[in-house]
Amino acid sequence: MQTNVMASAVQWKDKAADYAVQHGPALVGAILILVAGFIVAGWVGKLAMRWLGRKEISLEPPVQMLLVRLVRLAVLAVALIIAADTAGVHVTAIVAGIGVAGVGIGLAMQGVLSNVVAGLNIILTKPFRVGEYIEIAEVSGQVQTIELFATTLLHTDRSRVVIPNRKIVGEILHNYGQVRQLDLTVGVAYGTNIDRALALVREILQAHPRVLKDPAPVLGISALGDSAINLSIKPWTAVADFSPAQAEIYRTLLEQFRANQIEIPFPQREIRMLNQA
Image 1: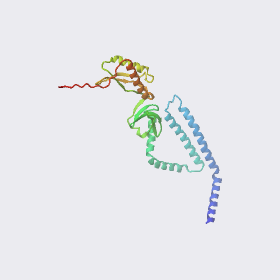
Image 2: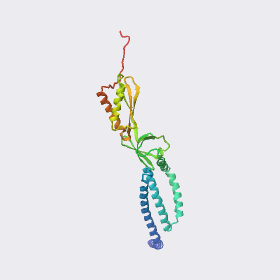
Image 3: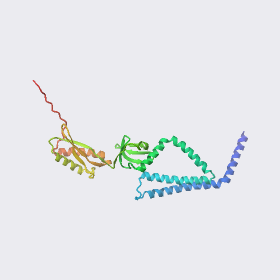
Image 4: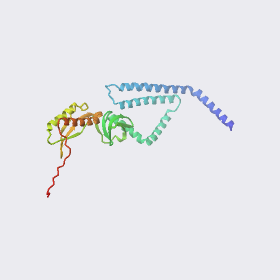
């Protein structure tokens, strides 16, 4: 048995030597083509990124990355086919095998592929862009990245929300853009001079650094409550300033109302006792 093993090893060695002699130059050529393909793919990718980054083209970063990757993959695919043909491999059989394998992989990865298709739809149709604040699929946040498989939102508590792209396409989308509108309410006593109170609120908003001057804040009376006249205050802020601006404006309102003797009443109830002895 040991003799058979040694004979088999010698036979394989001879076959390998014959193959190296007959196909050695072709294999070397195929390896060189692959190396050149990787180098050319990287060079073409950088050139495409530089060209797509021009201002006159103005494509979104996710679209630029997608196009650059497609260009690199196309160059590598051409290099691989040329290398295989140079090495004496039947390219037609390889392509047929890749097609059959692609069908099986596609069936096994339907969820992943649906995310990719949805990601392409988002990138091309642009229902939202990086930096905008959106509400979608019962979550909200500022768009941080848009990729082929998922979209990442930055929540107001600085946590990240990763949404599969297939959960976004077809859903109702609320896009706030780059700004948001605060909805503040403060109550003043019924004896207050409303024009004076609104003028003071307008001055506070005008002086606040986080409040946008355009569009102008919306001010008015929202309701006549049991104990107070409710003033509605709706200024606009940048997305990043939304949460801190609310706390700062409320504090300034409290301080300025106290300083100007504008009463913020607390709820009151008047009880009358009838038919007492």
